[in-house]
Structure formats: C-alpha cells, structure tokens
Image (cartoon, rainbow, N blue to C red; front, side, top):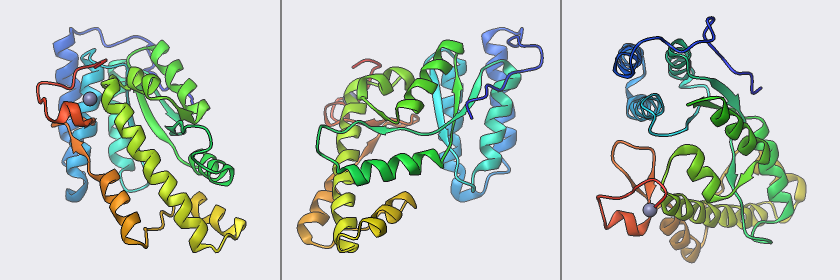
Length: 238
Ligand SMILES: [Zn+2]
C-alpha cells in the first residue's frame, strides 16, 4: 500500500513536454483498443485526466479500479511511470460530513469499506504523492483539500460533496430501516458496498435531486449549479 512506482532510472523521461505527451497519449490509445466497449468512455476520461497531470494542469489524477478495469488501470500506471510520474495505490476517501449528519455505525462501516478498496493516484511530483497519501489516510476529507489535490474548482467539489453526503444520509437511514435496526446487518450491508434504494416518494425525490449531476465535458468534474449555467467556467480554485 502506498508504494511509489517509479521508472528504473528514477528520472523523468528526458524528452520535451510535447514529446512526453505524445509518448503517453500513444501508449494510452494503444491500450484503449483493448478496453471493453462499455468501459471505453470512462477509460477515455481517465486517460484525459492522466494527460492533464502530465501537461502540468493538475497535481493528481485518481482512478478507481474494481476488477473490471484492472487492465486499463495498469496501462495508465505503466504509461505514467515510463514517463517518470510517481504512481501510488491508496485507499479512496469520502466527503467529511457535518457533525452528527451520519451515525457512528455508518462512519465505521464506510471506513472499513474504504480500507478494502484502492485508487490509483498518478501524481505530478513527490509532494503531490504525499498529499494524496494524507487524504487517503484521513479517509473523510474537506472539499477545499480534495479540490486542491485533484485540480478541480472548489465550488464544484463543495457541491458534489454536499450531494454525496445527502445520498449517504439517505442510504444510512434506508439501511437502518431495511435491517430493522439490527446493527450487525446494517453494518455488513454498508461495508459490502450495498446502497439500499429509497422506498418513499419523498426519499426518491431527495435521491433524484442528489444524483442529478452536470458533468463538465472532457473532464472528471461534476459542475456546481453556478458553473453549469456559466459554461466558460469551471476554473480551478473557483
Ligand atoms: Zn463550480
């Protein structure tokens, strides 16, 4: 865990920035041809995120891998390491909730769930890699620190955190009802990654509002309401 992959020379590729971008993008295009068709759009997005790191536009790209996209994740890792960018595996993180929004049993179950998952973080430099490890170790993180690490607009990350926490609150309440308050059952449900769906009309409305995202084209950012109506944005730090 958290071991940094590096090229054997411990040096970045000696070519110019545009040569390195070409080398990485060529490797990605070649690897993309082997990705299953239904995963290809997500894979493209991951590849663009990596290129943004290589181009110096953001400190870290974080790529979740869950078994289906392992080959693609390894292709990204190989392309990055070959060009000299540090790559680490780290546990994912979740938004930091306001005090008492989420019950203790749920927070503990999600902490164990995160511990069993990994995110590939490809980093601009060692300092960015250390920051990625810091967030991974914290587990629950604020919008400002995640926005800084991933090079996203703070406003968009803050709204995405708010949406995610709305869903988490709903999932915790629904799991508790589905398990009839049985602490063991509801904990196992969340730890395994289950997300019980709402049952009432009111909860469905809450859920629908929370998942109604507006992705920013060619990025992995979901835009906040303000940026969604002002398309020249989002801008980093906005
Ligand atoms: Zn925004």
